[in-house]
Image (cartoon, rainbow, N blue to C red; front, top):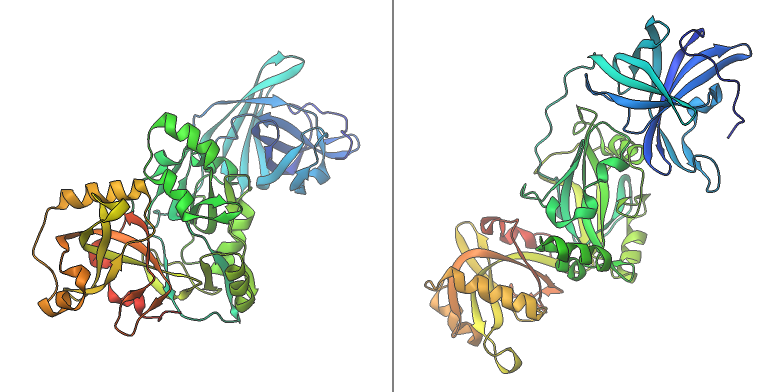
Length: 474
């Protein structure tokens, strides 16, 4: 940092045209409001630390503590102040622009900010000295920002499955994270919504403060809630968190199974809908807005080299990669060929239509689940899954299945006769969805080597269709 210059009196000093507000992650997150004024040597930035942040709504009054003036060159600083230096931590420019004085007297400074984020009439009133520093009251009375855009629908854009990786300069390529897709709605707090619009914030307390890591008044991020096992994203590890809502259990799980929100898109910012911007522009905005930490990361992305990233994903046991066209806009709820997923291992959401009794060590619980997919209104048998369960998922599954009650078989008699395990199956109402992993699809249209992953509460059975096989199987 450049050495401090002589402080001026903001109630009488000549004023310059510019202002900047720094968002400063020091010991505590705060804003630094800086107004250009003049001393005998030239322009300086007269500064106030604002612990609760510069308000962007009228009539919110906050403390502002006068600090030393800064050199005018500091107005463009954005970066990291190293440890063991005054103010150590990340610094970002929250807003910048021009300002003009509306009124000044011996205790009050009124000024109009015209920035990229803020546009309004503000007031600073000197109140007292605290520990040798001037305390001021900062508030806004007139907000001249345009009305906010309506928020886009809280339905994430979906990728289309394709069989093979590829290189193409028209696309960017990202790792596919093996987690839970979520939209983070960030304002004065953070709320997390699943793919079907269900709020899941209570299950992930460490993600409640994502908004504090954004240089924004409000935003909506698209991303994935991820848990890691030895540095590799693990859905099985994440399952320990998915249905827990007890506060004491969560306090322990936050230590043993911490989660990260891996952000890969931004669709709303500062009251503006970004869905019509290209991916390339949204990505640039995302990287500028997010200040990463242990619980918020930006998913890495590369250009052109999809084949190399796919091979790296296989080598690291990742789920796959996602290719996104740089010129694509964001289409909430749509499955688009502008976003393509290429998987190292396939997964499938299937309807549970029945189950078989366990034997041996599994006696008294589930032996396997009978899976089907819709084609039109018809359910088509795709196989049984009997591996991938642990005791918890077996107990949970048995409870769910018994609650459904038994119904007639959904398949023709020749299908049931063709598979011995189906002859003793207990048939249930097709309302339960299971996510399974598999290696290949047989010529008969059956899953080869399937393994159970989870029961899904965020997907309708009617959405589990044969179209999931459209890209083929590896």
